[in-house]
Image (tube, rainbow, N blue to C red; front, side):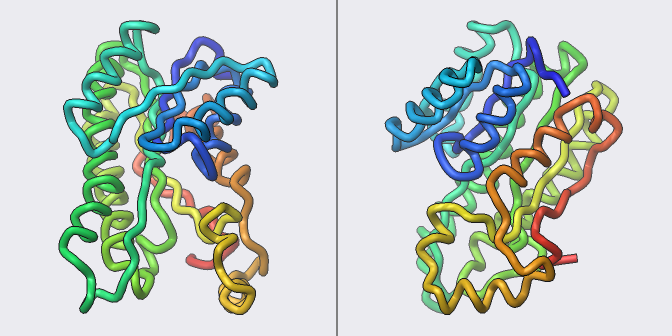
Length: 247
């Protein structure tokens, strides 16, 4: 599966799942733009890994929830390359808490980044994709957006919203040969899950039919499939990478 000559933007690409996606797409030949908002050193580390392996990667910092910043970044990337072929909306934050105690600001922050950010980025890149009549957009959702998760009403709502966004966009852009799909990871081994206690990890593991947490590479592999020629006849779908936790 080759992506030679393609330009890919991965939001929240500096670490965790985003980093694995950047590494995988670069290994397939794409020129990858690693987006970050606050941790430039992590983005630089991701870039260094890709370049050591012979890949092509650039770093670009912007807040996906800031419409002007998104427009500026997209304009810069298109100016340097002539197009953006692949967008992976992976940027996301959490502000967990029970609904009865959740601050309105915590609701807004999560919806702005996790849902509005995907809308802003997709809207900005789709214009160029429509001109070329080719594009691949992948929205990273979550098992929480399908099964729900106590203490995460904001996160679950945002990720569920991504599913509706994915389907509507897929219908709007299909005639221009732009596919739009989602991936809903379950519990993946990242910095976030490493912070869970041994007791909580064991409880979660019992809910997973495959009885293990996933790897970031499992999600990256699913993205690679959807943006490659092998996935060209798939649009409007969400691929669940969760070990059977949600079916």
